[in-house]
Image (cartoon, rainbow, N blue to C red; front, side, top):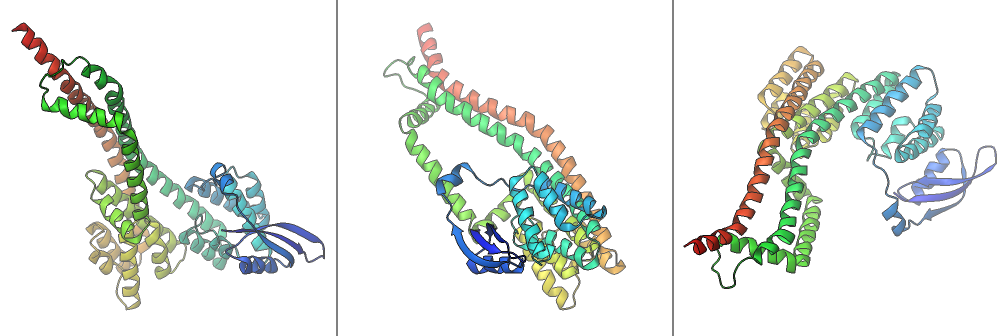
Length: 402
């Protein structure tokens, strides 16, 4: 988002200057007028492309938002005005990006914009669920409770993501290590063994394959590097498209072992988010609109969109959710029971808790199972390479013995 430098006159007639972020110049002028300023001069600050390479903005993590929400709830409970709370939290925040956002939000509120409307300008940090909960808190006058629920929701999301990350990081780290070991062998060890082979000796097929790969990597490394970079850029560009995102969304649930784990985490996140929003007094349709994208799956978001249309036509939530084919029968049955008894939010919370425990237990089981499997796989790869380069030596020794 562009940044504009401004010179204004405040309500007391004193000149002021500063910076404001806005989509365009008209929006920036509107923000300043809402704050009660008379705009004298406004100009866009052109970003230095070389500066951005070294000063990339720090991402606001879920943990940062959780801590902020809990601290803000505590300060509001103590009777401190909202603007003063935001100013204080901005100054003591360890994340500079969040600190800048909180300072800007405080200025917008001071200019007459509501808290929830101010947060909408930063949807990359505060998603629709967060904004809806804050808006519900403003309307009900119970902001402290809403922020506490948000903090708890964010903490559960972080725990869920940490479980998934712990299950996938170890195999990824071992895979990277295996690739580095194989490359080291191809660049340094295999060429040494090649010098031991007598000229004109017929080499076994595995040895010829390993030698060919080694020679290709050493002599044409730049070609391999270009191909890898091109493939990475191409895949990244494809994933930025709608069809690419759909393909990735389908593929991740078909992964062996990990697909079921990811599905459980998505179901848990959707049920927990929907339960939190409904407990906060958000209408069902609005809660579904926020919970669908928050699940992290396009399939769920689309199923929820269909559910919203069906609800407006007088149908129940559970029917279109079941027809999507994504959710396990337990989820749809619990939703149907919840609609009949009027305790949908409570049952969704129980379903979310069940799947969160499932993800945690599955993660522990996978970690203990994958560790020996990955060690065996690495051993087999290295063993195949070593046997391939040793085969001709064995042949020479055998022929000398005869």
